[in-house]
Length: 284
Image (cartoon, rainbow, N blue to C red; front, side, top):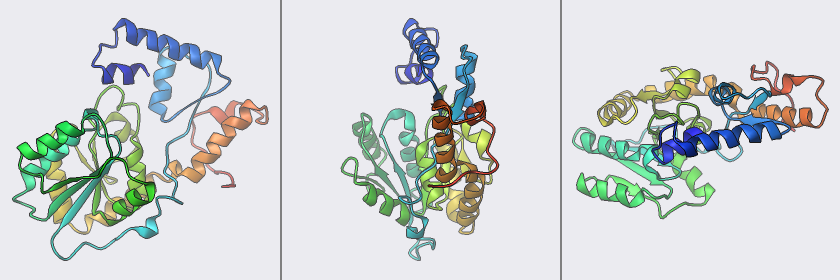
């Protein structure tokens, strides 16, 4: 929470309110029977602030019963179109302005390029205004707010690639964006901004990466993916392999192990250690 609070409100890590949030975080962990977080980097941040209790790590793998890879279209369209998709909260920190600017750079090079943005948020009006200013309103389409999950899944299945353009900051360096796992689950190549957490788990063979908040580098990443039809499958396959440990059947078992530990069923604190489990348990 301190990193999120400081980033969202553009406050210094030393601001009294940020320090108060950090203190409340530590009190909460001390009070709890078990604490769970979403990355090793976040776990390390808690430890750096004085936590002495073990903390479990459960990655936010997407449920493949919902984000079904069998629904995905795996062949490029023959008409030269190239459709990108991004979904979730429409906030400035998620870098959608970088994506819109990249589309403006590429509108002559890739005539069939388009972007679908699914979601809602406080930055939506600013983003729509930017598309008009850059003359790409015909290339960037917005959903009418948040949509039913099955509609979103169909939209991802029909896209050529997903985009995760979040801006690198103290918070995003500790976390992994959930939408990234949606693309992995559906076997879609993803264009992802570089953050410390992304680099820790996924090398450059997994995603088409670009420098955060750099529309020129994002345009380069899109152009390279468009120009190389074989790259789609390579990226999707490699990302799936790298994320095997993060898949929800495995992470669900880690979560249940944490609960078992709290209830006294575990024989040791192994259930809340961070080390990867070599033999994930039953999916039941």
